[in-house]
View 1 (spheres, rainbow, N blue to C red):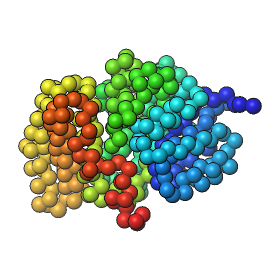
View 2 (cartoon, rainbow, N blue to C red):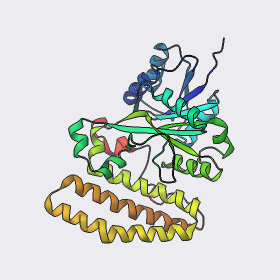
View 3 (tube, rainbow, N blue to C red):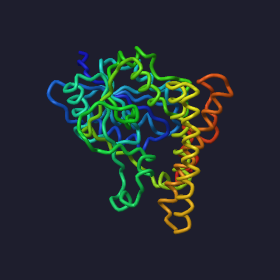
View 4 (spheres, rainbow, N blue to C red):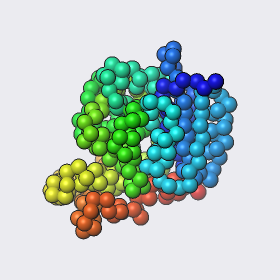
Length: 332
């Protein structure tokens, strides 16, 4: 007999079996109120490691429905759409393969959407790091690593609120209504762009600090090379959103302002921190600068290409699927 399912939890993955194992362990033991049922859908974008084995083990550890779908390297937006299509629930919760969900994560998302009568709710994300390391990181670095502070209360989001598909609950029909994730975006930023279209369709997104996931931070993500790469990707992705939402003129003015701010404020501070040997602040300043430059380069590339869906200008630099091969020497 098929069990009624209230929420489909979608996890997209690629060659992160060890991380995925921890993520699934946290998902199969979610503490939900009586009557709230959920399934787990894992969409594998062509992994060559033991991802399938990890999912099979998770299925053996729970009576929840666990679905494994294999794709063939179509990219993050496409595999998210595959997960949406496979979901048999009215509600879809997205989380990532490098995150650990707190035991009441799903319950708190569900409670928030019911309390706010919301169609879209996002939660907080902490960094899985020793407290001493965490306290040593500047705010900019923590944001680049994906931190979404557990602050405030249940409240509607602004355009610049830190929501992402690492911690998001939304109705399946509103995703389908706006056309799903844009599959031309293969380098990331697909969640930011989707949220932009939801806002345009009149959907109010909400934030709750009580639905928490912990973002696993491997050692290589604390290195300067990774952080500047991530900042570059962030600048590129936000430029995509702004050109599409604001148009070329306003995005161009924003790009000029960002580069000017980097030149007049961030770069002098960067040089000062370098002179004083403040390594953490130096890296954070460098990230601010490269993010502004990546934003401007993307806007210029779109204008020269004559459309807002031009292929990402720095694709060779910010290859999304190759992150571990680029930075994780321990992974080979």
